[in-house]
Length: 138
Image (cartoon, rainbow, N blue to C red):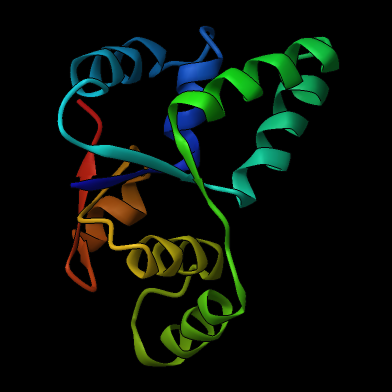
């Protein structure tokens, strides 16, 4: 089964000072060796780098090393133009109107993910997106 990790989960895993670090870490340790494929969006890489270097003031070279290790364990889903077009269409057709989230959800759908793990309340309220179950990390 393919499982997609939201940006907040990725940041939780990489930054021990975050409120949900322990919960996300425990979820990851419990699930990483199960028969699942873990993914995160290529769109998150620069966001994670920015937050960890500019906001948290971690050394850029160290962040790059950690990101490289992270990507060795969790596959990167590269976003594409079709994801953009589908997110744009969803903005007009759905009551959910967060374009960034729709962009990522459409990429998760394109690669066949069955679950989307997040702590984002707005996404959790959505519950399901095109047969992707949206689940709280716990």
